[in-house]
Amino acid sequence: QVQLVESGGGLVQAGGSLRLSCAASGRTFTSYAVGWFRQAPGKEREFVAAINSNVPWTDYADSVKGRLTISRDNAKNTVYLQMNSLKHEDTTIYYCAAGPRSNYRAAYNYWGQGTQVTVSS
Image 1: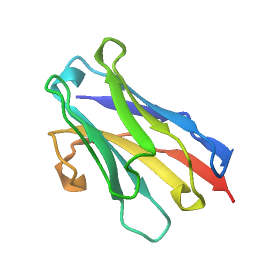
Image 2: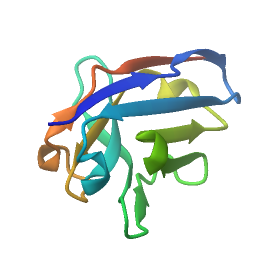
Image 3: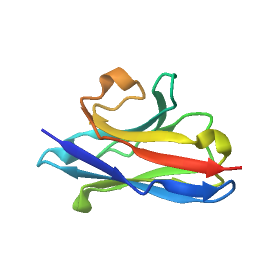
């Protein structure tokens, strides 16, 4: 069992930066890949980025490549999403999830509660 808690969301101006954190509890966290997803009201939850655990691998949605960077610190049981050059369209709730290496929402077993990111234009 893995519990996930996101933090770091907030209000930022367009062009600014935020760093989201996904803190995990559970002894098996390092066995899982971690993904970040986002969901705007009335829309499907969409893939943002993912990172593997022990074997180097990351993946990004085309819309965030070059602006967002995912990383993880297994010693701290934490995954980060560094968000730079933020745009108004990045405004939504961001969720982290743990599961097998994938960029498909359905593949992930464990989810956090989400953190709101608001980018003012």
